[in-house]
Image (cartoon, rainbow, N blue to C red; front, side):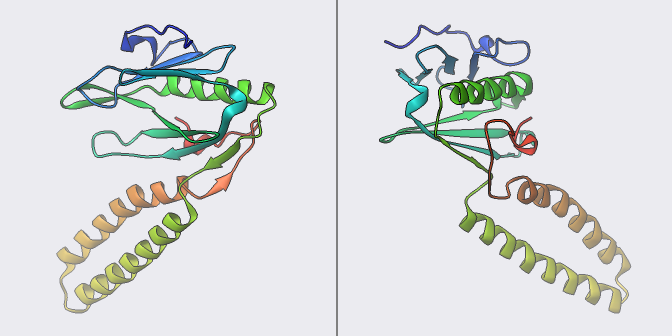
Length: 202
């Protein structure tokens, strides 16, 4: 039987116990709730509940997933042997216009989950970033955009459109900061229980 979890969203976030975490994936519906127990990872999502033994967890993928309303947003996808996946996000919806970060609670929960998996002798695959094909496509798109932007900049300078050139430089800098950071953090890699990737945790 799954461990009974508190109904309040407030079990997670700043200052929460490292064995418990919860977040709201949307304004509608109850919180997704998780607890690390001796029996395994206990979860309650959308009226369903269960406990996954640590030995049954097949893989964990950590990634950086910013959205327009929250640039500091991280995600963990946990796969179970034989099928099943749980997604855990580092942010929670509070109002229609506010998605709040839960950096401390999310990080503490992830670190403790990896510690318990290691202690259980887990053989789970530990993966960081996005998939290699998606990453290669993102790099190709970035390269094409960089070439196009360079061409537009040279043309603007050649015809004396210095205001337009300045705009292009500013846009390129903003684009590189946002998209470049996403690509850099999400480089495909594997990691170990003793060396979690800091760039994929808040």
